[in-house]
Length: 236
Image (cartoon, rainbow, N blue to C red):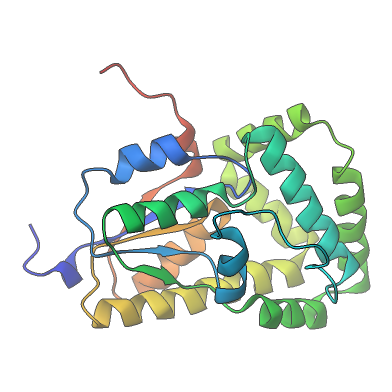
C-alpha cells in the first residue's frame, strides 16, 4: 500500500487510434481506484474526437499539409473498417468513463498546430515524400493487411519503433520524443496537484519513451500494452 495517492504508480495504457478498445478498457479500469483519467489529446483534437457526433466538419482539414490530411483520411478509413467505428474510439471511451465515474479528464498532449509546425520544420525532403506516398498508398491497402501489421507490431513493438527511427528520424523526434517529455511534465504537474492515481491513455508507441521520461522524474509507472489490451479474456 502507498501512504498517499501521489506515491502510487501512474497507469499507462497503450492504444491504437484505429482500434476500438471499449470492452478491454472498461474491464481494466472498472474496479480500479482512480483520481483522474488523462488522454493523448489537445483541446482542438478533443473538440472533434470527443464530440457526441464524431464525423469532422466539412473543410476541417483546410490549411493543413497534404500528407497530414491524407493520414487523417487513412485513420478515418481504418477506424471504420478495423474497429467498426471511428478513429479515436479509445479516447471517446476514456471520456465516457470519466463522466460515468465523475472523474476529471485531463488533456496532456501538445497543441496539434504547434506540433505540425515543429514537424514540418524538422522533416527532410525524403521524409515528406515518404509520408506522402505512404498516405496515398494506405488509402488503397486492404484493411486485412493493415490488421496483420497491427498484430505484428503488437508482438514486437520495439522492432517497429527502431525501424521508424531509422526511416523517419525527424518524425520520431517530434511526434514521439518531444511529446513524451511534454506529456511527462504535465503528468508530473498533475501529481503535484494531488492527482496521483491517474490512468493515461496514449498511443502504444509512446509507452517506452513516456515510461522512461516519467522514471527520470521519479514517478512510478505501471504499463498495459496494446498487445495486453487485445489479448483474449481468460475464462471467468
